[in-house]
Length: 304
Image 1 (cartoon, helix red, strand yellow):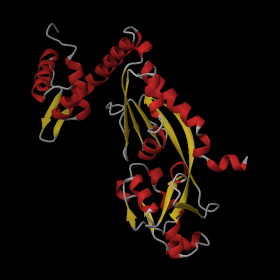
Image 2: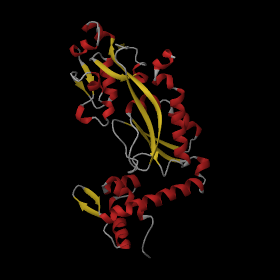
Image 3: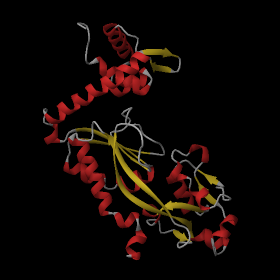
Image 4: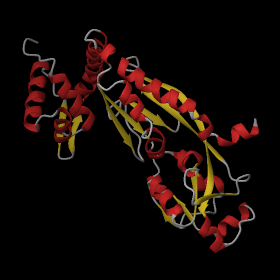
């Protein structure tokens, strides 16, 4: 072990999570040849082969799988030392990557995140908003917002809020196609929705819940694209109220008959949730959602 270099574990983790030297090198601001040498040195120090080098990338061997949780624990301890001993807890400095659904990220969190940046200017806030699931284990994000509570892994999860979705269409589309009297009439109208085989979460399969006979004529994996198509008069679309209500061109359709409820959950790795910068980011998101609850569940206040 005299030749063991603890810093090489950072390279090991980056390659294990990305599966490619080039991706790991970009994340570590290094070059792939340097990372390759570090992996080789680490394998020599441990007298173990950690990766299978395949044309498609680097795959962990059984020895690599055994090293992974040890390396992650060392990473956690290093981050804790930085946070608690190095003064980061007071300065709240460093990067925090937040992975969220595109609608929540673009329409709710993005307009508010400047408040957090103003409070803690030394934080580097990275907002990933897109139609995908982000892996905490692979460190694709430090904090994620999902549509369901995770059931596996060493994760901390808290429910942020339920939110309501309704059926919307542009006024000119409704004027051209005529009034909609009930749910039975919906089969005769054009729908905008998700591409079925690209759904990243079953909670997004709205049309099947509404009526299995309805299929979307215009499909997109992107919620923002669906929204813009609906605003342009392309057809009917199921949209979150907290987004659609800000579009004056859209009108709710069958408000009393078509109502879906989904949930937002905030998740972090259990070993990292108490780091000051991550804890403050999570508290900020939770506080903002709580203050805006009426926007997520607009009918709740009226019913009270």
